[in-house]
Image (cartoon, rainbow, N blue to C red; front, side, top):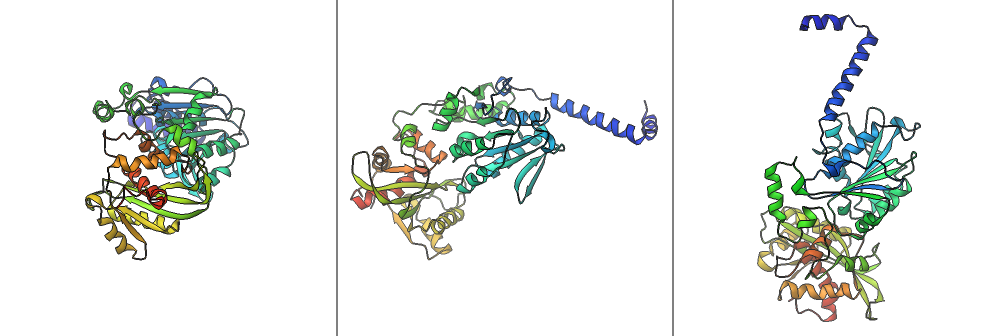
Length: 449
């Protein structure tokens, strides 16, 4: 049929016939796009998930965990309605480490919802940020980082499906599970899906042990849709290291021999909220260079408890609390601003920075931005292990605690082995903070001059 004949036939259609043809063509185009996706075995969802149960995808880097969950949510939207009273039949939630992560990874990213369904529209209103489909179905986006995020989840409404994206990286995973479960009650079979690179956090271990959680696992080496060069680089990055099983094979690794902190120790000493404090410090472990934006800057907020509480030795003392981890790869000026912002928000007593190896630039920048800040310096007179061991002992004695969860810091604490690699910046900053709050006042200042 020629183009002219086709135009003539189309122009002769009634309005109803044209609408029907458009609908059929859209459906055919949709099906063709949908059928192009070839899943890995671990991206194939279980036939059934119990009410309040979960399909948990554990995988190494590049194994398509987000891809599998995005596909599942789109399929769910296009399936039978969970509740005919709800627009589009579905009311869902996406929870990520931050709301921005939910937007970038779960919605707009190359493996997100828009990659599987271009009809998806992202909207931010006074009621929050939502993903909406033409049918009226929607998914609200949440973070799990701050106390405000927890409050939003508490009042987040009822849902038929909740997607936990990068669950092991959520600072407040426990509260996210608790509060989302309270609203998981739309339809006959409300349930979870989750995607994450595994980390041996208590919440992840508990999920895997649950009888209503179905787990699938993928390995980076088996991710054949990932470009070979990328697979080669990822394997080269972790192969032969202690994190290979976690980052490449998607397995929970055991505690590392030689590490000063274990996951069990951190979980046993963890507290859920910040108690009244008598002193707060913002500790900074700056990079050597004051020009390189690729270096990670350690910025940790810690405080000293107001009450004298017995530790595991029966000694009554003020406990230390690691409150926040603001570390990141950032420009020197941004690192200084981050520390100053935390200083004022937490009403801290001081910003403290290590100035060994050229790190004294941070003080100059801080004073230029805000000369009112109480800025102090510390110098390391002993090696990193000597400085870290007494702080680890505070945790073992039950006198130091991480508040809620600080996943990246905890990863560094549980994987650093002295002599095998340089100690990470977050760990160093935490060691300085608790040394000044707890050890130095008690006379243990051998590591600081």
